[in-house]
Length: 263
Image (cartoon, rainbow, N blue to C red; front, side):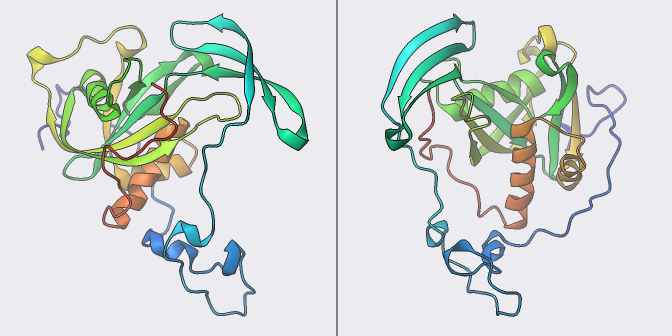
């Protein structure tokens, strides 16, 4: 595929492969086979409990249920994020003060080519003082924009790539104890390059980004070996590895409900 075959004049650079050190991923339905009723492991001598038909069998699901709260202050307002101070009524646990970051939300893209290579980008991140390998990503900073439209724009601007097929892989809350940022991770397939004359001019930290197509299994091995550290990127790569092993039964439509979306 011309898009991801790195020739001598390509923007793509070689990478140091890592030997995969994890077993073949079983279909996701098998994960619960060794767990007994109520989600607790049964004795080792007991036969495996039947796999539940859904997560409801364990009673495990996040629920949006905000406690009564009062805004005390917004001590900082920035170009992208604000800081908020709230007084929160926890009922019998009392009333507490909580400080957190107000964030518009983000989208992340696992872009897979026909050979199941995933596109990784190297970008400098000042808060951690490091060059990180990440998936294409961006802010939901246009009011009311559909998340998958924002994801498509970021993929084009950061990687010069378009995708004809889109699915939802994951919804994440990366740091729910200190930020209300919500992240949706998309799977993008059927890739084609953006024509040269239509490509975005990248600036600032994006100006010297390096793009590398990496086999999905090896990208998962890099994550598990501690060589990748961006949280949503690691989650997206591992979710894609599980999804592919399950014949993509884990993906959802691009318009799937997203309770935590803010913008």
